[in-house]
Image (cartoon, rainbow, N blue to C red):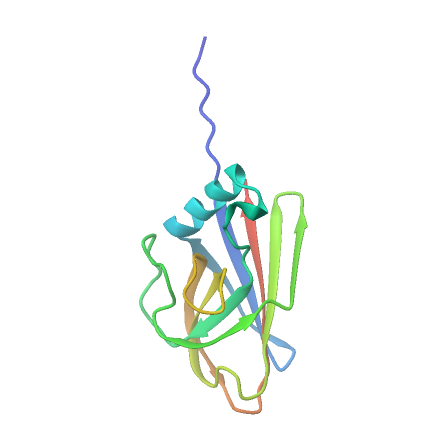
Length: 146
């Protein structure tokens, strides 16, 4: 009898829109803290104290994501998610950074479970998106468990 060898993999991907135009299409890293968060949610109910993923952050950090990351490198803004959804093993998170929110040279994004601090699920770094004070930026982020 051969041994069973199953592995669960989590991958993420995001699309960044500036003023309703797709400008970036990038992969992300599901960090160690994010994987621990998923494992905790499998054993605890909502009253178990682990808050759901509720916010997205953008920043100007340029260091490549690492499994041990727990926060954005240089956060410019964090907003509540505007929508979440699940279809099979794919979770979708969407957030909009309106005019005047997160203005600057945006090079990173993250999903977290609090308006400050909290547990980070995913982080990515990408080539600069210059967000002016009148610009709106929407990020649609998918996380797939396979």
